[in-house]
Length: 135
Image (cartoon, rainbow, N blue to C red; front, side, top):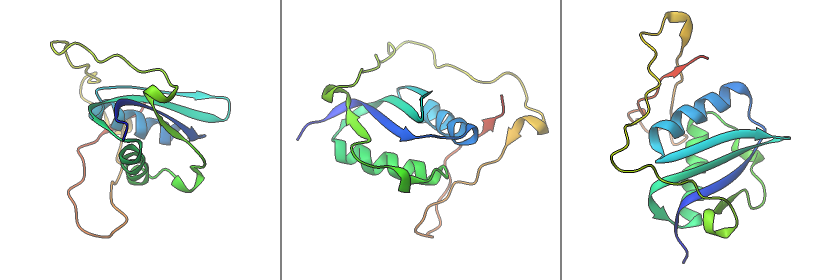
């Protein structure tokens, strides 16, 4: 079974709030990531720390999108591929590269959007540490 660290996902159109939530999550949890709109879709390219199969990425990404309140019922066809299946891989940053910081000082109340992360099973679970600051 093929495995890869980078993947390429073609997602249905995401509104500004969905893009912001996904971008913040990917920045925190991916080794490298890019997210952009193109025509009527959103293109997400990411590189993870460890190699996975396409099926493992499908489950993980679908679960993440659900937790970020993105409608996954719109995902159709072959929306996620491994980078070696025809998409462009993102290079990993060097191990000694400093982690990028989005901290631009203390956010004011008008800068902060609180997002409730939950799971669909109803079981209690500690939410991921995520804070989205409005642009």
